[in-house]
Length: 137
Image 1: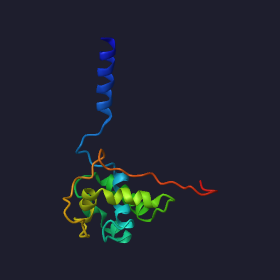
Image 2: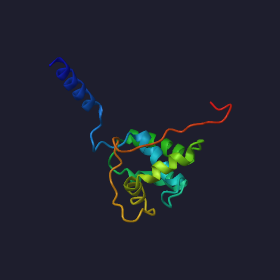
Image 3: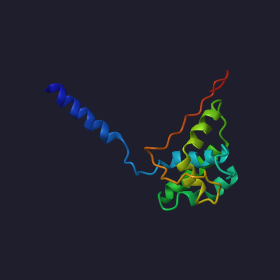
């Protein structure tokens, strides 16, 4: 009985730590994602256009302060270069419905046959950048 009670408590705590399914991605992750959609060629949006027009992709979902901060993350994502950039881009472009959620409102090319879906904190996957070479910090 004690083991069952402990398991139930742990299960309840784990459930509390997951973000809600409809919670928008944190503004820093969303910004990096928008920049990477442009940089990785998931759409025909250029990195400069992503920085200039990112507000179209996030209309009404973020507070003003988060929108201002997001611009830096968009700019960083649009130009980042890591040793595992191919892996990063493969994961970003593989999230087709989220790519379309960014590309469509910005007037970019979408992935055919895939409906746009919300870019949520729970569902957005971003591979961390990594430097593998010598003398890299």
